[in-house]
Amino acid sequence: MNWLRTAEFKVGLLVIVVGSLIAVMSMRVSDDPSYLGRAKKAWFLLPNAAGLVKNSAVRSAGIPVGIIKDIKLQDGMARIDITVRSDVPLTTSAAIEIKSSGILGDKYIEVYPGSPTDSPLPDESQILTVKEGGGMENLMAQVSEVAGSLKKVAKSLEEATTEDGTRKHVLGRIVKNIETLTGDLAQVTTENKDKIGDIVDQVHSITSSLEEVMNDKSDSGLKETWKKLSKTVSNLDEITTKIKNGDGALGKLISDEDTAENLSSAIEGVNDFVSAGSRIQTAFDFKTEYLGEVGSWKSYIGIQIQPGLDRYYYLAVVDDPAGVVETTRTQTSGSTSSDITEVKTYQNKIKFTILFAKNFWDLTIKGGLIENGGGFGIDYHFFRRKLKVSMEAFDFTRTNVRGSVSYSFYRGLYVTAGINDALDKNNAQSGYLGAGLLLTNDDIKFLMTSAPF
Image (cartoon, rainbow, N blue to C red; front, side, top):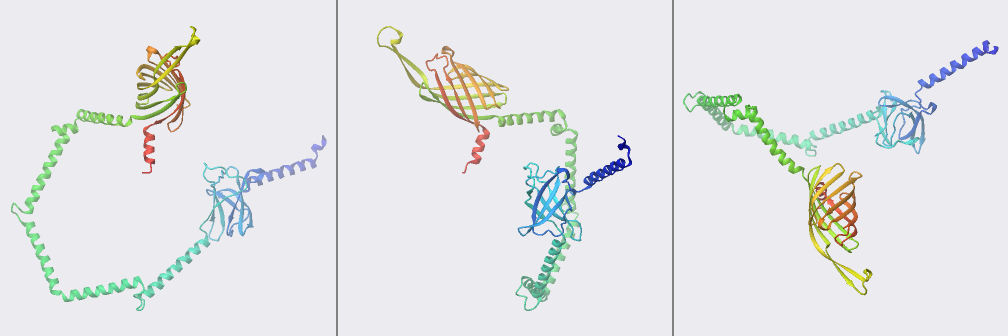
């Protein structure tokens, strides 16, 4: 291993190290972020690329973030390819603005990354939003437009003030009308000098009369009236002072803290009563179920009154096609049970439900009158209260147990399924399937505001 100690090896190693340092430093100080793949590429079109130079800086918020990679002709326009750092979050709403960096016509590109909520801009995609900045060319064009407008104004003034152009222009007609008006005024003052003198004498008489009123010292004079007004103001000041000090009923009402607090409490109580009424949530429930064994529809019309989040009242009218069940047994022959035929007759009946319910998070316990019989029920909610599993028991002389599952899928619309009279104590056991609509205050407001009338 003596070759490691040779001068040639040491010189070669030094050259490699120095060259590597120079290469790394060149990449570090270069404005081109495309080294080592640390870049995003994009392009855009300009009608005129004058003032833009290849490899010049691309800035964002005034900070260099890339360079102009290439400038070439495409479809009669200038295509500008840019490369920016990978940490610049370009989105589909990104925009380009051409700005001037001096008065000599030099320009640079300002890139706006776009809204962070938009999707990222794919690599080597076109940026569609391009704005031309205020360069010297635009400034000179605007100055030229202003000079042209001033020239037109001067020409119009010249034409309006000449004898021939007076009636052709609005400004000329205005000047002519002013000239006529001043001539008429001069003529009026010349012809009515005596009347104008009379008017001046009358004004002098009015001012003399005002002076006499001001100097009148009688009881009806202006000075006495002023004294009475001053006394009235003094009395008002005395009254407000007493009120401020708490004298009298009005003063106690304003100054006494207990009285003011009692009045404030009374007003607050009235406000709470009124606001509580406005916070009550009301919902209307319309539901129908098809009873498979009965072969008919069972309908509900209900109202839910909710004074708070933890409780509500529910009132409903139920049209039950199996409200009354009559069973007729007929024995055909023999004495065995197989020879007995049962025929069920169903009669319609209107029933009422009045419930009070208490919410415990996702669990609801309710009780009261259920379809004309005392009873209770339990509801449990899943999936942010969209899915509800219910069990009810009522009419304990012939205990009716009912189980159901309902799912709300859009703005109060829901479907339901279950079994009625699960123990068949009323000879009305039947599975059912139905749908309903629960309209809240907000839903009713939405329907009313969306109505076309």
